[in-house]
Length: 498
Image 1 (cartoon, helix red, strand yellow):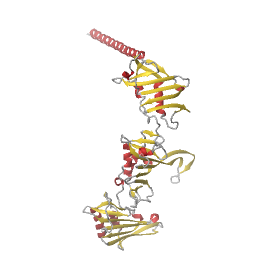
Image 2 (cartoon, rainbow, N blue to C red):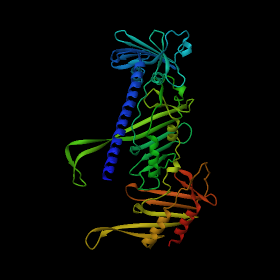
Image 3 (cartoon, one colour):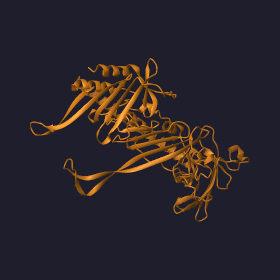
Image 4 (cartoon, rainbow, N blue to C red):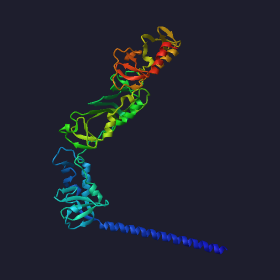
């Protein structure tokens, strides 16, 4: 029994070794076939012409609407016909790489009777390169072979039709504008944008400014840092989170192509009298290592690096749209006319200012307010805060505030409760068409007087409109509606004051 098991084990091992040997033989055979096929393909490739790239001196290129001669000057390719024209050096390099070693898949016809059969009576692309020693290579691209296996071509003057790889055809499809260099757009980070100004020939302008001190905000808020200056002349504060989303629309100024590098006649593109201008103020940060460490006055820690903000600005003018719907644009200070994608321009121009405002009508910090006058249907109610300074039992200086309603002292809690209700007044909708308000008596007017360095009076009136809204009237005029129920609640809180 043991002998039989031993024989079986030996047989199994022998079979496994035989299987392993067969697998090795099979893999060798497959690799041999692949290597044979690769060798055969290489043998079929025909080297038709070569050039020495470092000795090229001129290139004549014709394709689509382009017909230009390029010459090498000071290591840069220039247009012989238009020396001031900026040439796309990357595209020139791509063309040169095609003729470094022109290899054909096969020769199709050694003596063609009719070049038109191959699309070569009128080639789709023509390229002639000349070396400093006078050697030239000419490449003409004809029709694409059915099935996309390559392009028919003529190389030099031997009149033989070759089949070249698809890269030769696709790599020589540059238009005239493709051959003009496009200025690189600045790298703008959304959070580094601090000023956006959109001016339109027709329609409302838009301007947004980051103003950390809030000196321009009409509602007295000391919290929000962004102010909308246009179309709201009084300077309404904007919602910071919504501004963060808007900033992303002004980070990309990528030009698709340059259609006119010197812009002699801007009227051709609607840029003589642009339909809009887009201005972006931003900053770039640069971190530098200090030669000598400094001391942070707040923490006492040593500072070895300092981040410096460099103020930058970018501005373009927007003209007409081309046949594809994209816009002609011109950078401020430049004559060149470029094309930008419509979706990029549209999202910069089509800003709904109301959608990003901080909706509170007046929201001054109570610590900066000393008097409030509320007039409701002709009756005026006064609220006042009187502040005094003195020393407590420990000898430390402290401030005390006394609250008054219509001249009578009231508790702090009820005063602040009514104050919170008052400052909750919001803009609930934008008035789309002008409404005449001259001569209309307001239902209620609230005026806050603020003290300190920014002493001023913030005032808003609420005029009857319909069963749902009051018209909000400020120094900027009547541009918004307020929910009638909320305004009535404010009036009730002021009158009852409890």
